[in-house]
Image (cartoon, protein in one colour):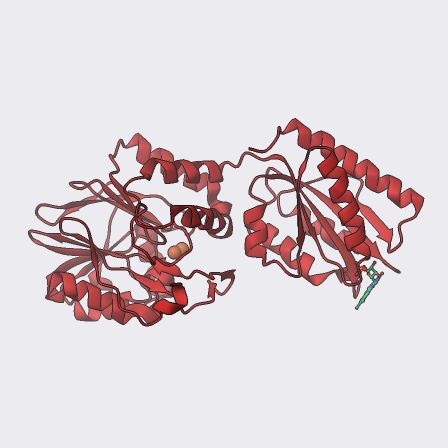
Length: 414
Ligand SMILES: Cc1cc2nc3c(=O)[nH]c(=O)nc-3n(C[C@H](O)[C@H](O)[C@H](O)COP(=O)(O)O)c2cc1C
Ligand SMILES: [Fe+2]
Ligand SMILES: [Fe+2]
């Protein structure tokens, strides 16, 4: 069974601990998350319902096209939707709250709990009546009788308004995008029910694609939660499995990803129409390999930037190698450079440039983009005619030697 087999299939809600339910959904329809990132295994939007003695709370929601499945699950666990006292918005992005207007029209007694920053942004996205919105400050709590929700502001994960919700009596942290991963939930919803290795790899790709730019905020959030001394028995993110057996491992993974330890690895991102550039980078890759540096050789025209970012997570250096195309950097390589710029994914890494051309180089454009991406560019920048002269070959050797020396200083990769 894969995600496409699950299209249109209704999955029952699941009880996480007594009176706390997963009411999320799988999205097996979208090909690209955020219209950018391939999700061949789909993605889950996890939402939760907490049923207390004095009413219920719903934590987060789902994307618009799955609203009915989500509302149906909530109805199944609370019975009367008018028993819902609160709908918590941890993060406003439409993958979590495009469903909320519909829920609020049915859950007519519910108030929306949101961070003050979220309250300022909410009307840019959704039409929620102002008198239903209640701002919660950092550390505030609300009681459902025998269940208490505490709100922890964790801004910029990856929007300015983000917060987490902690259910005190059960030790559940609803962390929204933090600790999330791509991949629909097929064999179960818990870390001990699914093929965890798949989701861990997809968590790494998700991190590099979605939250890496805000790594410092991820670290701040983890440190804040740890400082508060909250006991986390269950870590319930909004994408991917719910952790009850491996809470410490997923927290440690996110901590590692947010302060990547780059090692002696070079990623060569190249494009080549007629094979000249490819011939050069293949020879360069061999030299690196002989020097004990790990090499990833990636054809930018055939591998999606989502995976290129992911594969680069521990690379100490990235070489961008490209022909000039209509006076510009070859478009697929330029596209990857742009992703590195938007995500600021060059930080803490070296970059090198290798341009082949017939009548005019395009290195200026490459230098400009890579400088803005946080990379430190290693000289010499190479601009060579399709057939490198012996002078060009010497320069390439010089560049590779320099990179090997720098990469060896980082230590070998685990
Ligand atoms: C469609 C097309 C456009 C090109 N535009 C330029 C250009 O603007 N300036 C230039 O110097 N060379 C240009 N070239 C030549 C290539 O940049 C050059 O031959 C390069 O080394 C080809 O590398 P490859 O064999 O890896 O594709 C162009 C080639 C093609 C096919
Ligand atoms: Fe998000
Ligand atoms: Fe999300």
